[in-house]
Length: 165
Image 1 (cartoon, rainbow, N blue to C red):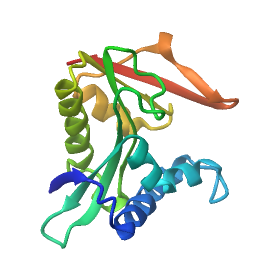
Image 2: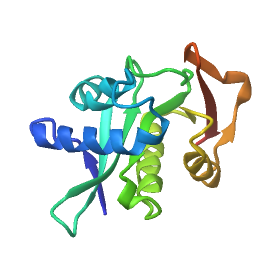
Image 3: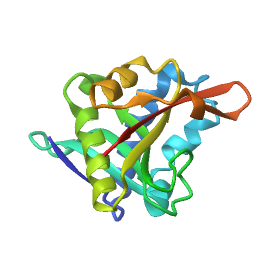
Image 4: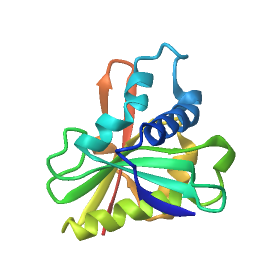
């Protein structure tokens, strides 16, 4: 497996990442008309305003296995990261690739990007139902920060996880 930046000059790369992101989030969406689907599919915009990192299967022609949006300082995609923290969003692993270390590799990339940027912590938001992600985050040293939980929209409650670097 290789982790690389999204190929911004390749519309097919963004399309494949969007499709796998929607597939990974499907259990948490209110069907195909859920307004969040459009945000999940807008990979090119996320990469232009943040950084989309893609884990690919380097043994099978670079097929995307997962992706994450790393939100550097100043990115409009930041939601919960404090001044000293990096932040990532939309961690997604293709259903067929779950359990193979893809999510861990993508989170590790975000931790490295944050250290390189001089941050001393990392934060993220997650739906309470995303228990698979919670197990990964805890195994990587993240802890729940319930005092920072928030709701971007009525009925969408998000838990915050954070850790030092």
